[in-house]
Amino acid sequence: MNLMNEKESLHQDHNKRWVIMTAVFIATFMTSVEVTIVTTALPSIISELHGLAFQSWIMSAYLLMTAITTPIYGKLADTLGRRNVFQWGVIVFTLGSCLSGLAPSILILIFARAIQGIGAGAVMPLTFTIIADNFSFKERANVLAFNNTAWGLSALVGPLIGGFLVDQLSWHWVFFVNVPLGLFVALLVWLGYHEKVEGKQKLTIDWLGITWLTVFLVGLLLAIQFIDTKPLPALGLFIIAFIGLGLLVRQERRFTDPLMSPKMFHSATFTIQIATAMILSGVLIGYQVYFPIWLQSLYHVSATGAGLVVTSSSIMWLLASFAVGTLIAKYVPKWIAVSLIGVMLIGYVCLIFAGHSFPVWAFYVIAMLNGTGMGIIISMNTILSQHLVPTNMVGSATSILTLGRSLGQTVMAGIYGAILNFVIRLQLHGELTFAKVNRVISSKQRLPIPNQAAIDPIVLTALHMVFVAVVAMLIVAVIINWLDPNKKIVK
Image (cartoon, rainbow, N blue to C red):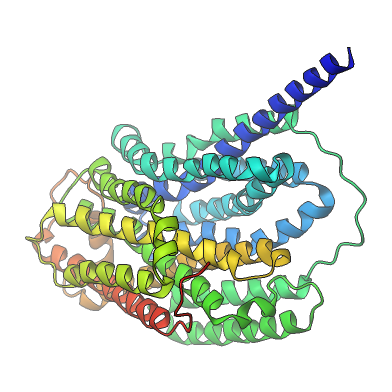
């Protein structure tokens, strides 16, 4: 009888865990697809809401709030319980999605995207913690691999779903599509995820560290946003941002339980992994956002067709990631990174000199090279950053890498937008206005636009300068990896 009760208990536990895992998988897909699905809809959003001047904030608001809140939620989950914090994140993210779809103006859309980011900051890191809580060490590798397919799936289908919704319905639906998913996840967590929150020691939260991190990130992003139109306020914001950075470093060195322990950065190779992931994440947001804009505005490719370019990169990312273990076992990491970044660099140099006759298929090739390189390098960054720190710091190392990747995307989204706007404004003359350039951005623009022949070169030059910034970043990535002191195969 006892044996039967034990088997029944194990069966019920198994079912409960897979209810939780289903919720975690959908939540991972929901938050990660948000980036890929929105990039495809950006040209239509910009055109309809007349938001070219603020376009970078559509991505930046989401990524910034995710970056700021991630370390806060990690601390709160230890005291309040994973379930409560995770449930809160899912509900806030779903609310933000609904508000984004209903947004009547670009500023309200940016505000709603910030709400989405606050929710995503709880959901994204806690998925890994919940898996660790509910599965043994032997099971965890397979479960994590299964959950990682949600990221790959979102990268594959996100641009396709986004393109289809924009072409067949409207851009509003790229946000509404997440609402039923969010409600379903919240219901699964409410019904199937139960935990006992044990009494903890007094929670020590690095509030000053969080404050200075927020000052640094918000100041930096605002400065980047205003640099092309209001240089003096931008300079002041840069100063505030770097004061915040200095105070953050000082606080982390003094605090007993810091958000980001300085001890981890004593390893130069670890620091290089974080920096590389940050830079490549900035490159990633560049081609995810500006390839569709290039193809839709200058080549008049549909939103679905433009989204397929990003999808080709995602396919190669997934396939290439399976080769990481073999490559690390045979080659020194620095040479893997230098070689692959060098190949990516060649593709972007070609883009800088691309004219109106540059073939569409070349964008697919460049995107696939990006996917291959990043699938290997960023996976390698993750593995090495966890391997190079003490066991008791693996969680912190992973969160720092996640924060670095979010920061890279957030900051570079702002910089690319500032470059695009500045170069466009610099070339305006006569009857050409910023509003007329705004109308060219969307491929859904059916009516002929006066001065189209004069506007196209302006947009092309602005896009060239965006990818000059990408080339500069990749050169920096090559240099820092070349300087990596580790010359041995990591074992």
